[in-house]
Length: 497
Image (cartoon, rainbow, N blue to C red; front, side, top):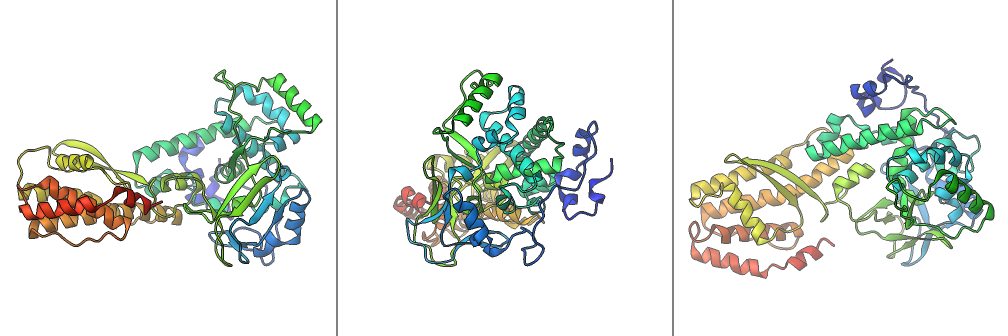
């Protein structure tokens, strides 16, 4: 088989997972890859080179008309061409105002797939599906995207043209070599296993969906569509109010024919939520403190409202949920600011004993802090300044690695590693203060005006009490005890909410 990287196509495939030998080994028995993707023809003038649409497209008559056909609407929004792309306010948006309404008819759900020409083929294969019900819905949407992109004159063309290309996904961890992807996550063995499991699942899904008799599904095409669903789908309450008699009859007939009323475990599948694609709502980016929120109902469809007053030129964002930056990078391909869900592990081998130390912005309690320092001392009852300094220096060296290490990685990975560095900095400064106290016998003025300083104060004062009178003067210990008592864990957490 020819090397995919030798083709003169506008894709950064030589840095992608698809140039890995493991991929070729899996494909030995299958036909060779065709590198030419089935892409829509897009305008060649005044178009952003990466995304293929103009800034004003979201407010263009074509998009407005497309939404208005089924009762949808958009107010005061415009696209940020990026990168990163997103949506911003084009005028003052008052708190509570409606920004976007996508009617149920324009939400790509199981209903849409049922009305296409795919359901007979898909449902005939469902009994052999070994994944979950939500994964099945995602696979149905993946097949739908592939089919609609091949169609000439699809009614969904306006939506399809708003989606990123495969080239735009080149920095997503699922598109990187295993080596680069692991560098993104700091070489974590746990993440390595998750990445391998995800790739194995994607290969199985591709093999499964390739059984569709409608068309041959190339792996690159499949990856584009599958990542679109993985990164852009919403989970909304299931629509149960279907009123079209023909649709109801057809769904019941297919359900009886293919026994889709139960999950492979024998239990009835959850009907509480469904996985959907929502045109143009997927353009909004994520923030842990969003200025907009969405709702969904069978009557009004998918709506986005302003949660605060939004000034012109301000990016309009929603929340993807309480997710760590590790999850955001692995699932969506980006990382943001440090948050309470962030946690990474440092493996340390001290005095022949191994310990996994969890790093996060969630404050450790006194028992955990004392246990950590006892481990660093080798659980020895012998206390001396020399041994204490050695223990602190060992931990400091391990933490400093995450602050100073700067591998060359794609931008989203760089953002994630910066998050890890910020969290590690808490312990770097903590240990530096502890060493200073040990050497000077004086407490520093740390301050408590940020969550980082509050955490450092918590850990430093706790260490002083743990070190105790055997290493420090009594007045130092008493002062640290007073300062520790003034810290409020509740106040610390509220600074992050």
